[in-house]
Amino acid sequence: MFGTDHIHKTVYQRRREFVFLLLSGIFLGSLTMLNILGITRFIDLSMYFGIPENSPVHFSVAVGVLAYPITFLCTDFISEIYGRKRANMLVLIGLILNAWVLFVLWLGGTLDPPKALNEFGLLSPQIVDGEVNIPYGYAFYEIRQATFAATFASMLAYLAAQFCDVQVFHFFKKLTKGKHLWLRNNASTLSSQLIDSSVVILITHYVAHALPIDPDQSLGWQLFLFIASSYLFKFCFALIDTIPFYFGVRFFRKWLNIQDEVE
Image (tube, rainbow, N blue to C red; front, side, top):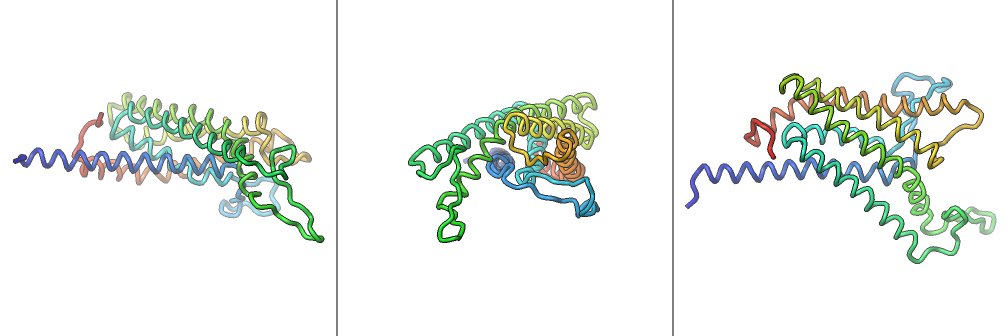
């Protein structure tokens, strides 16, 4: 017969595995959405920030960015509860997932390609009896091109930002001797997301040439607005997620029965 202590340990171990898998699943799922949806659409959020329609300044973010802030909350939870090694391991798995998504998209476009592909590897709409005909598979090739264009930038930015997030988090945790949870949560997330926003926008434009740039306006100003919009969106969520992070850590430590990092 197993003793009561053994049963309790088993229950807590299962809970710890469940929470780690849940956080990892949300992290990897959000990352996949970021890469697949990526820059397939830019959403103008100006009205939500009080910016009028006729303003020369617009607040636009790529649709893939919408789910991205949650990834930093997940890595912060894992860093706090499971330690730096687990967090870095998850970041590495995310990079492997990026490569897997690219491979599947490449394979899907290479096997049995339609004859109607143009020089850019896209299906072009055709005029049939005076009407625009969208060929079957059109959406896939549009998303495929956008994903390829943005994922290279995303992978570099992802590596830099996520490793920065983990390192800065633990730097402040050591500096404050485990106190001031809000400080390491915000410092790590805000610094890493600035790196992420800048790298993604600059590489997406200069390498992939995939941003909707208006040739009649200043390039530098447009790139600045893209970076600022992306960062401001992430900045707001970083401040908001401090509250669920604070209460989440307290809840998990009690529910998982842990005081120190779980290795």
